[in-house]
Length: 422
Image 1 (cartoon, rainbow, N blue to C red):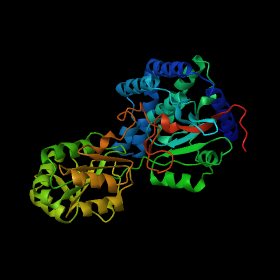
Image 2: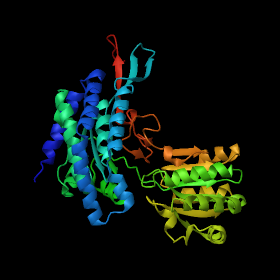
Image 3: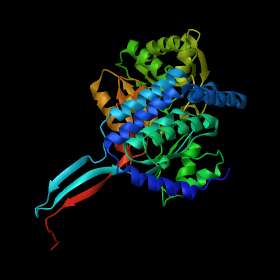
Image 4: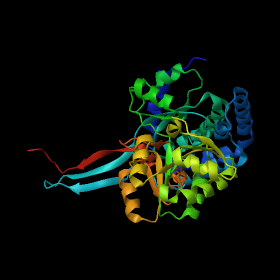
């Protein structure tokens, strides 16, 4: 199957020019149609997804990856609900960010507008297809999607549902397109479509991010790789700390905001680590411990699976039921460890010392920093954004979950009355 990527880009650009004319009501109508089509076609979507899961098992994908690509009736219902939530959110397009009148009487404002055409390359999570389509449509952006080969059947089925809803709503089918081939050469071609595509968002591993940064002629926003930390301070409420660590590690270990490393203040280690080990053993979490943490857990691990940490274990995004564990002398050492190993995604401090909390907030430069909370909240839905295109760890344009506002840019509007520059 041959794909003309230039024609796909041209079609997307034309669609973006049509989308910018739409009212909020028209966009919301299309979103509600997508939600309804998802529910109506759930059975056929699940059949295609079962094919992806079966193929993944044959290829030896891990249980964590299989969970990421799995769709179920409740997950499809949740996707439809997410689309309806996006429809309910305020439309940022046309919003005035700032306005002022210059001394000469010229009235200036900054007004939010769509970015234009967004290219998104992603792996293993078919729900991303719906999230991107909903957020892009609401903000008047066209989208070119390239999902991973492991979710090929699911993504084609989902885009078919989206395009059926677009057709019902009398919107251009070019508003949401998918590269209908797993051939990687089309990724390289997409990265060169700077005449038509305005932004590239890769959602995947470090290799994909590196490829996009090195080969793209289009601005790239990377994110979604999370080596996430929790520091248990000496003053932490240890009972709640066990609950928080369990939630951050176990609730859904295969996602980017799941916990990868827990750092424990030396003064709390003897009491906290055995209690944590007992709790995490119930979910069969493997602990990769270093130094004094290893000694404490080997002596008082109460049957937990404890292994010595390898030289690279604190640089791993596990995406599985594995947790790095280390004892630190103080807040200084905790901050230094996080600054060395974090991907600046989500990091948390558990403490009752507010001076320490404020210092942690000031010195940890991650996209999301928490005090006495699980890292699992770094998510567009949890943040009230409806959904997300990605969790950006960049410092330019957007950081954290990218919702509606993050898919807009702005232009200056000037209203004059015969004004000329002297």
